[in-house]
Image 1 (cartoon, rainbow, N blue to C red):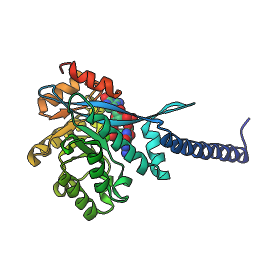
Image 2 (image 1 turned 90 degrees about the vertical axis):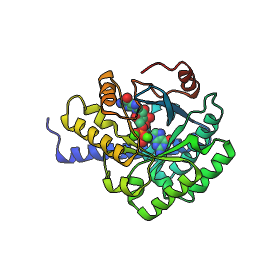
Image 3 (image 1 turned 30 degrees about the vertical axis):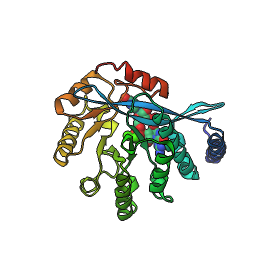
Image 4 (image 1 turned 45 degrees about the vertical axis):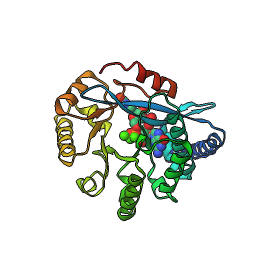
Length: 275
Ligand code: C2E
Ligand code: CA
Ligand code: CA
Ligand code: CA
């Protein structure tokens, strides 16, 4: 039997209520996890395409919910951003990553993601400076990954902040390049140390000549601006071959290494598999 419009509306309203309740519960649990060390960090290796040498590790936040198991950052980061928890959570990530990396046997660089909200909140530069001092991590070992959405709101302020961060000795990468707000203007006016080519281009490279053309164009752009390019989401040998042929500087992806806990990450480094 066909549902009446009334029944359909009631069904959707019930579902909406359920979603709102679930979001509220998850938000509360997120704050609790933050207070009780419920988060962990994973590290994913980044390698030089030409030599296979390890160039660094990206820091990726992990949350294992007591009942729901592992929740993807793609789900909880937006939630943390909407409830304001991203500011203390992001600070926790930076402090913990710097502390862990400072204790590694091999002094690799770490790349930490920053939410646009962290850039707009308080004194980020002072926070970075004091965490480096507190953990003893040399600034050259820290890279910060920001997306273009971080700088569109207030370009003047963003530029000032980027310069101040770089003055500390840390490097700054532009993340997810080629998607969203990406513009050449941004590359021209902001002193980025690295371009991270968005994973979507890798996903499509074998099926889409357009994706391949865009990769080539971004690599050429990087070369002419003298900014190294790292390709994200490399999963196959064919993709890596292409990057090698096209002269891409660095790569990251499941083919080279999955995100893993710190001990494994450093252990992987010591027994570095050839590319
Ligand atoms: P992202 O910064 O673009 O990070 C790369 C994502 O791609 C990670 O997902 C990583 O696990 C995944 N990945 C790496 N290699 C491959 C591959 O070969 N194939 C596929 N399919 N995926 C690959 P993850 O860990 O789920 O993180 C998702 C997003 O959540 C990140 O995207 C980042 O935007 C955000 N995020 C993660 N940790 C943090 C954090 O500490 N702070 C902030 N602000 N955001 C974070
Ligand atoms: Ca990233
Ligand atoms: Ca990315
Ligand atoms: Ca992303």
